[in-house]
Image 1 (spheres, helix red, strand yellow):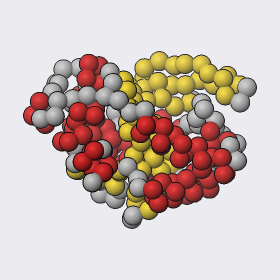
Image 2: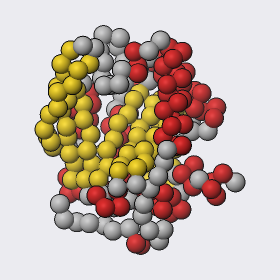
Image 3: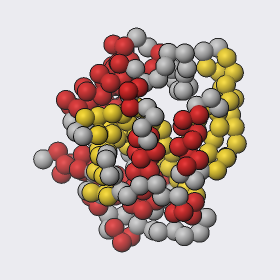
Length: 226
């Protein structure tokens, strides 16, 4: 079975209304369709790579290729877990949790996208809360980071709700214009005081070596100091 060789396919995060997991082939096609239909209004650009500005067919293909790329390039020292987000059995977006040298740094980064029809329903908060629970409760992370452009009020609101604090700014060029990116950082202590959803993790134990961690669950550190 595939799960015996790639245990990540058995990893699941379950919240009151969502399930986050790696998609199978047909579900990945559904995600590509969702990307083709649109992720944000055409007059805004929340991503520095601008992949969402591609024509619908190319946008769908880019979503597929990125998923395959991150799975193919996975290593315990450099990984990105791009989980499909399901509501009532249908994918509504992608929530990623990524890290480099996680075994040493214990720091993760997140990014995500949602199909346009699913904006404004609180799903963004719930799916980010799910991967933060995986990071802190499941993997023993110390800190989590994220970022958003200054005009991406929805993403910044999610971060504030979950307890992130400002971590500086960066200036980038998007569509030929200077844009300001706000960096944000969440400590373990802040996460513990801002938990936003009940999350159940399934299938984590055999995945630990792929995250660069000892296989025995009781060997995963649970740091308390910030």
